Image 1 (spheres, helix red, strand yellow):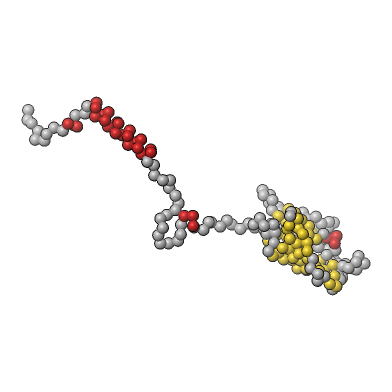
Image 2 (cartoon, rainbow, N blue to C red; image 1 turned 60 degrees about the horizontal axis):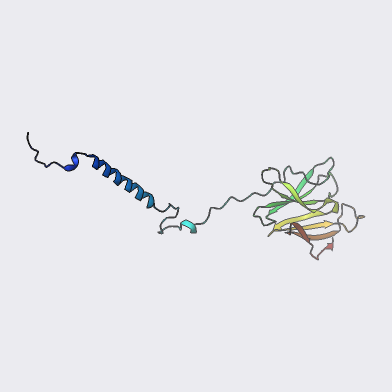
Length: 199
């Protein structure tokens, strides 16, 4: 038999002791890797050129909430056989919850004369499509006509005309006034400037 030029290597003939040693080494590597885990991955990148990342990056802006639409709302105004008309509206966040409310001026679609206005605050209820009336700022029984309506900095402002007495005909209001409403302690508080005057 011819001898090989390369000396015989000891590990080319496996023995049980080799398998035990290999299994022990693999078990040791697995155990060590379970102890030495890398830090959890984060979304932050290393500092470098370009926009800031990580916690200093601006948060995504949520879409702005839409103000309630008065279409289809059942207003607390008795118009008999004619329908109620929304003649003015203004929107804004009145209670500081970052969700806009809608303030509307409504009167009956009367064929003649000057129908009195009602001023109502609408809000959207979660899970419903139609907004609801949460406050009456001017009742139609007060015989008021709203000439201008605005919402600014959480305040409802209205310029109005009305009547000095019940004997004044509804065609001809003779008193001009302004009013403002703000949400305080769970209710709308009205303030009336001292510039009420005769028309």
